[in-house]
Length: 307
Image (cartoon, rainbow, N blue to C red; front, side, top):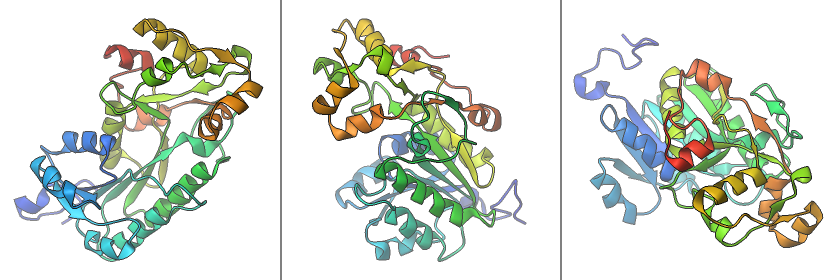
């Protein structure tokens, strides 16, 4: 019989392997799949027919569907024992119809055992540089963060019965040397300015490999209806971080400007990050998931120095 420890029960061996559906198969999704392929059957949702063959060549069972076309998601119902949802919301609006469509599709048949959703620490809004944990009241300042809160609400709606177990991972800046746009190198080469020290904001990071490991552990060890910060131990302001990386790579340090100058020189997207400052505690990640970070700080990760 199925149990909490063995939710698949006494099924034939070919059905006892966990079946993990990855929605949002980008860089982190691919890293998650790499950790799971030897122990689980991995499915990936893609809206591009061109990616079907490539995914199958990686040992992934590709399912064609589009989060913006809910009728194409019906095939997802009942197919997976675990779901990893890393797909971003749309670029506009204050809600996330994509997560809503996914949740409603999953409810059409037997529910998965667990679902892990990759959200953002932006849902906390500006915390004036304070150390915060998951008990901090959500205060999303931007439409981008409000869409993430809406997505979290839909995931929690799915898990309010306690089955599936739903975990929301709140994720800061993701980096990795082998990730597209995963380092600040291009910003340094463009001499993109940073704020003067007196006006600077704290920045938070997680290496893509550590995020993938946390995601997999959350599927097995995460508690029901749990929000969890996934963040390394760095404690740096943005300008200090950029200065340190520049020195490490032998590049020029970025110019420092005032916040008033930044309003005219930097894009609204960049300013949205510079208008929020917080330092993230991730005690739940280390205590409940028992995750030991491979890269304890962002400088460790950029140097390739593992713990």
